[in-house]
Figure 1 (cartoon, one colour):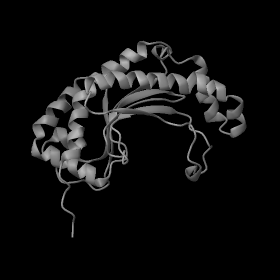
Figure 2 (cartoon, one colour; figure 1 turned 90 degrees about the horizontal axis):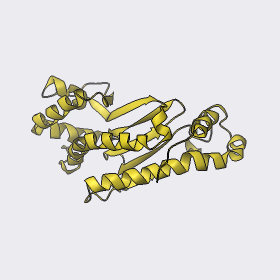
Figure 3 (tube, helix red, strand yellow; figure 1 turned 45 degrees about the vertical axis):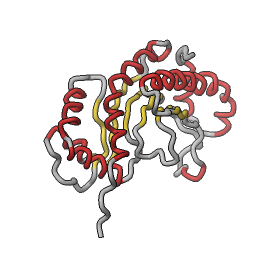
Figure 4 (cartoon, one colour; figure 1 turned 60 degrees about the horizontal axis):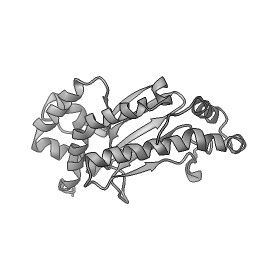
Amino acid sequence: MFAGFTRETVEFLWGIRLNNDKAWFAARKEIYLSNLYQPMTDLADEMLEYTRQKRPKEGLIRRVTRIYRDARRLYGRGPYKDHLWFTIERPSEDWTGKPAYWFEVTPDGWNYGLGFWRPSPVVMAKTRNLINRDPAILENLTRRLHQNPEFAFSAEYYKRPKAKAPSEILTPWYQAKSLALIHEEPWTEELYSREIVRHIQSGFDFLLPYYDYLRRVESEPEPPKKI
């Protein structure tokens, strides 16, 4: 059971950002395991069980990221990430473009939410098809989102806008290249206790209708290929 992160968690995250090398990490690996990786795993397990109760037929799994960067993709960076996160999603060989819950800690703070991670153009085209077929559903969900200060809509947009959205309120969704509903803030005291569990549970409950909506994208027919 998750009992909270510690002050050492924050110190380690700042340390790995400022001292991103193997010698520094090797001397503090036990701190990483006991103060960052294990609490994150405990929290992920607890949130997985909670979310499975909400959608028992989804076959949801959790993934806790590794702190080790892919050696083939360092691009001049150090060998370690200075942040750690978990996702809750359905199992799939192609996990991009699947709606997923997440929670993340960084040296600067924490964030959590729901969204697509690196969706393909086809996934976003199918999203626009779903919006076109019944705009009212997402319009209502968007109004609901605007009334809740916990989450903000976040997106990467296409450089060239797509066709006009069915309504102005849906334009951010319609023009998105990737999208997420996110809450983020600096490190807070609740991270050091079980208060963060209740916070995330409440947020995941709010996001559940958005998860259900994004799940519908997968059953949309693929748009015809341009010749």
